Structure formats: structure tokens, C-alpha cells
Image 1 (tube, each protein chain N blue to C red):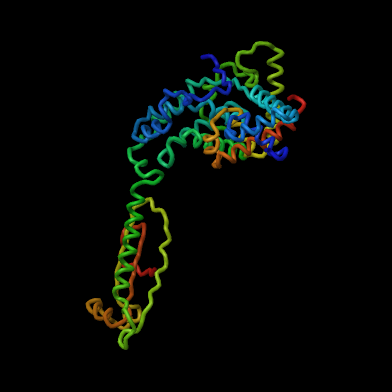
Image 2 (image 1 turned 180 degrees about the vertical axis):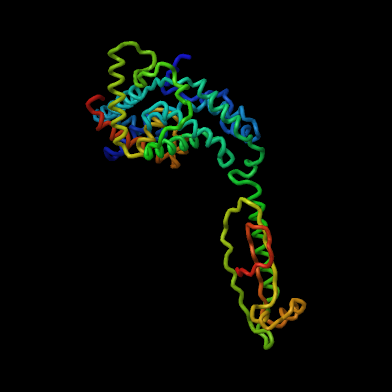
Length: 204
Length: 194
């Protein structure tokens, strides 16, 4: 199967015809495991993207997101607001990623490499459909600079920028993921932007 | 009016995100119309966002369908949830029942204790006091027992007051109320005082 471009794709629950997250959570809790599959399909991309941005390696990101999804399934009964599933999952993903990053534990023996497409040397920053070598190089350079700049931000600002600006999650979900208010998310995004403007002034 | 540069920047940041209130948006737009520096600031932030989004595009070599199938297979190995937990969000019903039982037990014990405490100072029944401490609220995920008993004080017991005489003892001496709560099945008398 061809690699699917990640392109900060808006999450599918923005589709007004989609079954609401809260309904899927309740159905899962009623014993319908396939309802959870729908949640996995809906949030695996932003979850993997967040883990990748925090960890820098696709296979580590897959491992963490797999762990986060299993953990969320097992703990689903403790989720007080079923409609807050997305933010809650992102919080699990980001916490596991940060713990992983701090500990840099040894790799799991799970065969997750099988889930990577064969083009192992694929450049994750190359951009989706672009074949223009100049643009590819520019995208790679910008991606590398952005990664360095993000690493300079305090954790809350980095998370706010990653989840809101890059992954384009709604502020309410970002607030749930970061366990703070929507107003605090706005403030962290603003502070992050201010710092990024300074750090990236030669490429902006 | 937006009085200072910081507030102006913050307003511009929210304006870009579409999260500024209608009134603040109107104020900002008036400012933008009149202030070239503010327009430049907006343009800077807009360009920054474009660059951040462009630089954050990922094309990870991941087969998402296979990943989802892999997770689904792992979920299949997990026990299915059983209906119910959301009836009382965030807390299993059993915990509430146990908490209610503990609370009811405490209320009953205090009531019994109050009943046996002399209601006023008399020559034969001096005024007494009762101190109830706790119990602290704690979650209990397993089965538990509560036992409530009343009887003579340790001093009377040492003097050999038999349980058959307990009513007399309570009627004429300071009573003792014992409440014990445990997450273990009952295993005889528990002398812990609360």
C-alpha cells in the first residue's frame, strides 16, 4: 500500500455525518469492540504525528501510539466525558511519548517495522505529492529548523503549537489533552508563536 | 482600544485562529485599518503560521490500514467492556454502594452512641462526651465489611462484666461504641475505636 500523506489532515470527526466520539465510546463500553476500531481509524494519524514530532522516529511513534490506544481501551470506563475522547487520547500519547523520550527505553520486540511501508528511507519532511527537488530540499530544511525551534520552546508551548497549529485539533481538544483551559491554550499558542517568530526570523 | 503591544499581539494571534470574540475582532479590525505597524505584525504572524504548517507536513512511511488492523487484533485479545460504567460517570456503581454502606454504618453508629449518652447531667449519669474521628474517605475496589457493636468500656471488661450484663453496664456506666470497617472479610471482634 502506498504511504498516505499526513498533511495535517483534518480529523474525520469534523464530518457532520460522522458518529460522534461520545457515541462510539459508549458503544465500546457496551461491549462493541468494533466501535473502538472507528476511534482508532479516526485518531491514529494525529496521534502518530504527535508521537513522531516528540520522538523523531516512526517506529518509536508507532510503538507509543499502539500502547496509548490499548491503554485508552482498557481505561475507557474511567473517561468521565466520552465526547472528550480525542483530547484524552492525545494526552495519553503525549505523556507516553515524553516518558519514552526521557527514559529512551529499549525498543520493544513487537514487529512494528512491518507497519512501515517498504520505502524505509522515505523522507518524512519531504512533503506529500511534491516531486520538485528544490521544494523537497526546502521542505526538509524548513522542517529541520522548525524541529530545532520547537525543541527550544517550553513544553506547554510546544504541545499547544503542535496540537493546535500543526495538527489542527480544535482548541477544546487541545485543552483536554493539556489538562488546562481553552484560554490557557490560546495563551500558550501565542507565547509559542512569539518565540517561534524570533527563532525562525531568518526563514519567515 | 487595544492599549499596548503585547495585547495587540495577543489579539492578532487569536484573530488568526478565529477565536477572537466578535467585539474584540471589531476593535482589532479598526486598529488594523488605522495602524500600519499592526498590519505588519498581522502579516508577520500569518507568514509564520504558513511556514510552521509547511515545515510540519509529514509524509510518514506508515501503512495506516495495517496499523489499524494490528491494533484491532490486539483489542480483540482484550476482554470486552461490560455495560454500565457510564451510568455514574467516572465511578463504578459498586464503589458508590460501598461508600453509601460505610456512610450509613457511621450514621447508625453515631446514632446508637448518641442514644446511650446521658442527655443531661444527673448525679448518677454525669455528662459525657463522645468524640468521633474519621473515617477518612477512601476508595475501595474490593469487598468489605462493617461491624458495629456497643458494650462496656475496657475498665468494665477488666472487672469481668459479662456480655450478658452488657445492657446493665451500658445503662449505668459510660458506654463504648465500636465501629470497625475493613476491606477484609470479617474475622472476629475488631477493637479499633473511631
